Image (tube, rainbow, N blue to C red):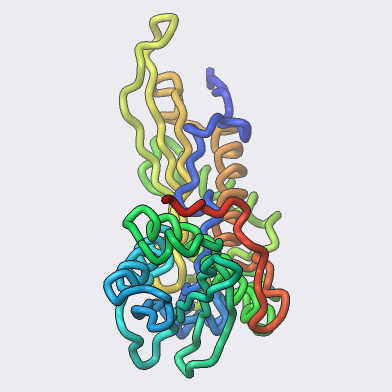
Length: 320
């Protein structure tokens, strides 16, 4: 008798479905699509943002350098490949300045193109003059944290604006997805999961294709079983881990969805049945979410060329 197993439900707890990269609303303003996928990021900036030491910062040279280094470090935490260095030919760069207004200093961040044209400007949280002129590690760390969130929002808007203007971008077409199959599953799992994934993904706005050529994304899945807990009634269990990995046209990981579940030992050694269907449906939805967020096609463009997106919801308060 074939024993039907409890399906991997869509309402699994967070520990049971982990979206790596794809689950976080992380901007990818510098995503480069490569020669075979020009629609992924439109005409987005290249993969580096220079952060030179500001000359008009109302700071000593040492503190101006510290400000630049802290901003670059915090931008890295936002997955933006920023480098505190002089502007290099062909690079986008961040022009940082500070203005005195009503007894406070207002940091100003301007994103510049390689041709030294203004792409967008954002102001940071004002800082009392005394704190700014005195300076401290804690102050510049807080200012940089506030700046990084705002700049990331600006860069995301720039990417979305470029994609909106590009008729070939993923804002205007379905993503072409190559599914490379499943490996490591016992019984008929490799075939059952693959067939169920393809069937589930056909309900998506994106399209599955049979070749990797010109694909925007490639999806692979691996299954791993390990011994699990003894079980509440003395029946041994196994721990199953199914990883669905999504990479872009350059082989760079866009995200991964991991499904974790405990099952009766050897219950999937032959037939997967409903388990494959439930797991594949969940994975197809997660894959689309990863593609949407990695490509940035759902991000809102800037309100106007060179305009300012909304300020950060909860900017960090400068420390005294």
